Amino acid sequence: MQAVTANPGALPIVDAHHHLWDLSAVHYPWLTTDIEPHFMFGDYTPLRQNYLPPDYLHDSAGHRIVATVHCEAEADRSDPVAETSWLERQHARYGFPNALVVWADFGSPACAAQLEAHLAVSSRVRGVRCKPRLPAMPHTGDLDDPNWLKGLSLLDQYGLSWDLRVPWWSLAAAAHVAERYQKTTIILNHCGLPWQRDAEGIGVWRAGMRALAACPNVNVKLSELGLAERVWSEADNVPILQETLETFGPQRCLFASNFPVAGMRVGYDRWVDAVNTALQGHSPDDRAAVFAGNARRVYRIKENAAPAA
Image 1 (cartoon, rainbow, N blue to C red):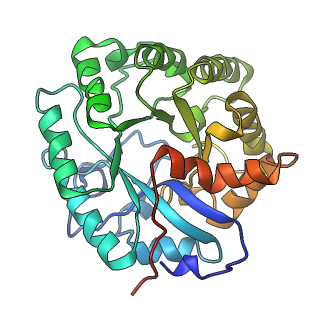
Image 2: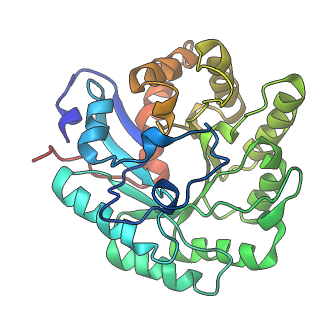
């Protein structure tokens, strides 16, 4: 991985959340045949092309990326292991990603078999992201569905974590689930997606974040704060990062880029700078934990990315 040798004196970074895809190798319906009309940034035509390891290396160039975590990218649900197999081939060639968060259908009787199939293909599988269906605010949807929760309960049996991806209005409901499954390591995606930034929306987001932070098994990714209706700015987003750090503490916050999706709103350099700004006043140990140490611990990453061939 070329970024390992770039700027060797820079702070090491473990990117705890990014995506890769090859549209000729794995079917991603949302990128090819089934365009999502309600995508969070509107028209996402720029994403509907390959995003390969060299593209990620280009976007993150100049930073000392020592390992990465790939999060499932909504590949064809009829063959969830295809993405995992393809990612293993990328690791063999490029030395990353170093940990995988895969998809399995919590609501299906096939969930256990899917988990076992992922684990058979890759020793780097560390967690699962199965987004709960949330029909409309404020309904809890899958978060109170016994059949769906049955699948979630399998994770502890397989030694896997849960990447939790819900918007701001469902954080409190997610906290109830986190309380119920205290043995499962949970990683909240994207600072809880605080899309509604008025006083009402931030108030609901804040209460939900505090409820989740009260669960010691929950961590949070400092990632993806883009908004559909306005240009990305430090004034909008650094305070969200600062409050997330204050709420969870720096030992439970993980730097993550969410590239290439976040790249529709902010460049990699600017995102690193924003997290660095939010960490002003914190100790060097805190900064090292947020940018690398916490992701290594949570996703059990021992290896560094190998230089690209």
